[in-house]
Length: 121
Image (cartoon, rainbow, N blue to C red):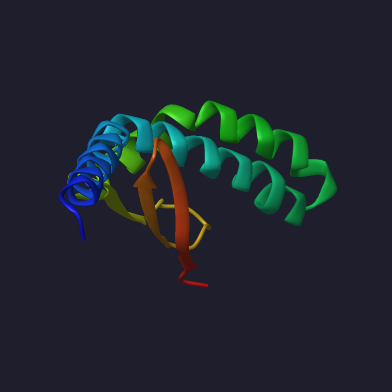
C-alpha cells in the first residue's frame, strides 16, 4: 500500500470516528425518543384493546400521565456510552395493570434503533 493510500485510509478513519463521536445522541435525546414511542404504543396498542367506552378516556389518561411516564423512563434507564455510539437499557415498571417492559436501544448517528422490546406478559 502506498503512503498516499495509507494517509487517505487514516484520514477516512479519523473522519468516520469524528462523525460517530459527534452524532452519538445523549441521554436527554433518548428520553425524549422513548417517551414519544411509549406514548404512541399506549395510545395505538393498549387503549384500543380495552372496552369501547374507555378508549378515549384511556388516551386522555396517557396524555395526563406523560410527566410521570417521562420520569419513570429517566429513572429506569441505564446508558452505556461507547463514545462512538450508546446502548440504552430501560426496565419500565409502572404500578398498574400494565406488564413490566424491557427495552434495549442503540443510539448512533443522531438516531435510535430499538432492537429488543419485551414484556412480562
